[in-house]
Amino acid sequence: MASSSDVTSSADNFPENPESGSGSEASGTTDGPARRGRVRARRAAVMAVPATLVAGALAVLTAEGALGVQFAISGMPFTVTATELNGTGFEQFGGLDEMAPGSPNAGDTGGQVLVVTSAIKSATLTKLCQSVDLGGTNLLITAGSGAEKVSASDLTTDSTELSGDAAFTNIEIGNDASTLTKAGVKGPIGVFSQQADTVRIANLRQTNYATTAGVFKLPGLKLRFSSTGC
Amino acid sequence: MSERAGFRSAFRRWRADRPFWGGLLLALGGAEVLLTMKASMKVMLHAGMQGLAGYLLPTLMVLLGVLILFNPAQRLFYSITGVLVTLGTWLTSNLGGFFVGLLLGVVGSSLAFGWLPDQAPRERRRRRRKEAAAAVVAAQQAGEPA
Image (cartoon, rainbow over all chains, first blue to last red; front, side, top):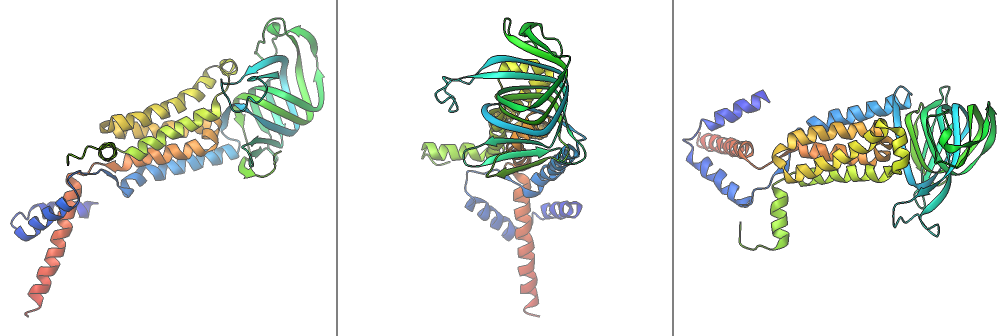
């Protein structure tokens, strides 16, 4: 850059070159009077290269499980499976999820889905697999298949289907959903609910309509498109 | 600046005055991230501040993209903020809208950052190139008789 600026300044010091001066004006007018701005590749690269590096670093850190990421999905059904889920602070209650008005996913449900809301204060999952059906192809997210497990905190899911082999400790069944204390989430008043100190679910399979997690740590993250779901 | 004031030519002129694709891609990226979120507000409020950040960052992406289009003079600040916010959505918003919105946002911010209006430096460089060519021609002409 230094050398080019030198050349530029020396070029400026040649006003006594009439031929080249008129030539440049002529070429200037052929470019059209409406002067267009344009993207300079090198200037764009000044931002694009570091940004790509940072994005790559974020992806690597997430895949190593060093960095937690937040999830909040809803409106379209997606499936979550895991070979084992261990959680502390578990709550579950029924509810109604409303879709956005005119949502194409509404179908004949009238835009409302009856869901079971499960909230877990902190959870670890082995061999997490999450798939969203995008119509023909599935977006597949897998993580935690190695030695390190997926961990999630403040995990809240609205499920239409939940299956697995569950074991609870200190379970309280039949509470009012508005009196729940174990996971810090309160349901609507007058709704049946249950809560437990710890939960362990083997061969978990959920069909969810919404999920949020305070922080997900996803060691061994893989994100890909696939013809089959989880 | 001819008087053919058709909508298309007016739009083209408007587009030439600003980093159009950069702003558009950044705004689209933000919209895509928001689309993948659209979690019900009730659930979001459970998540508290962290949940709000998941909405805040993509909304900022859309705003910055629109601002780049309508206030191109400040494009450097908008694009630098835009790329940082875009990278932040990886953490807060579904891996940056499952990577698609993140990609759009980074490309858009970079395009906006690299955009320059056609102005002095470019013409100077063109003149420099012309002069270099003229010097070569002059050298050849000087060389031929000898």
